Length: 117
Image (cartoon, rainbow, N blue to C red; front, side, top):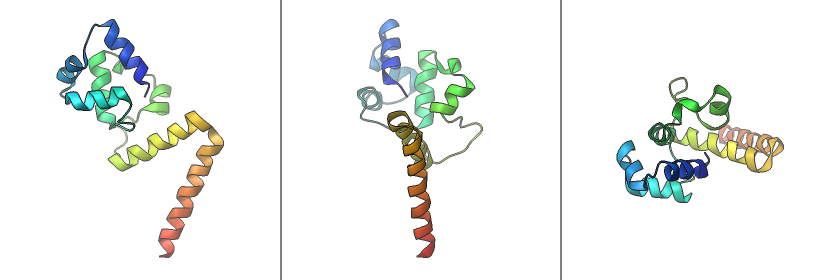
């Protein structure tokens, strides 16, 4: 999720955060947290609402969706699973594939330890 894109579109459309909140049905506080980068892992349906309101929801290609957005129509995931997926993607963007592999290994080790208990 690239917040700068959202901010750019808001500016181009001369929209305020309050306008976006009204269009999405989200609270103004939620919009402000997302735009300030405080809400690092917002729910996918929240992102989809924002993108729809900004008119960019339909612009995502399948490849872009695979990189940054889970299609909830095809895959039902919990909020915790969404958070894990976003963590994995963030690690990949910031540190690369090798660190993503380490993330998976760590998760597997943790699962094995839990199984032993």
